[in-house]
Image 1: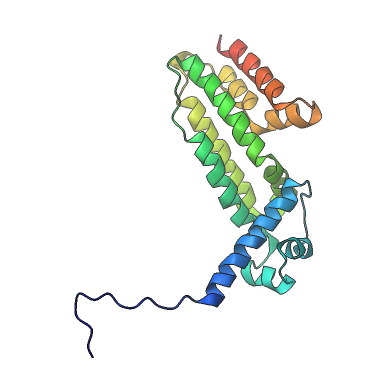
Image 2: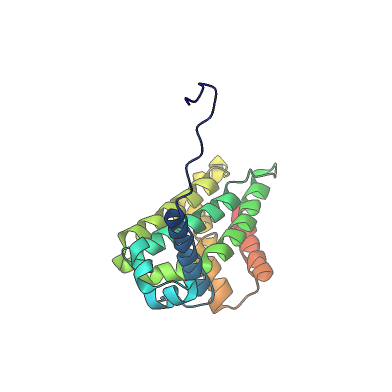
Length: 198
């Protein structure tokens, strides 16, 4: 019996292997992120396989090497960070808008901190990890420059000092080496930025 033109074709059966493969891939990425978040900046493929509860061969079936796994993590973390940074700035005055950016960066930097430290371990041998962070630095600078008035833009020393103060490196120093809580670290950056922008 022929099917009428209006009748929808029967759905194809779900490919169980493909679904399992997707599930395994997601579990491997989640396992790697969890291990890094727990403080191990250079987990082995064996540790990732164990945490994901998959075989070592499964890890390498989905990811040719650890660098390709870091690429996937960078995409996940990058999407989370952009969701924070890409929100419209609400303040009206330019100085308040810059200070709002400080708060946004504090939130974003806390999100990426464990993964950034892990990426730094491999950055010297990974072209992707180096260029990925360079892109983020460039985007952050563009977001800052978009809020600055001509007087600041005409003063290269102040512009570069602002860019430095609002960087991940400055935030990491306050949080790790100086051991400041998040709120205190943000207060320090805001106070320094206020002095710079007058």
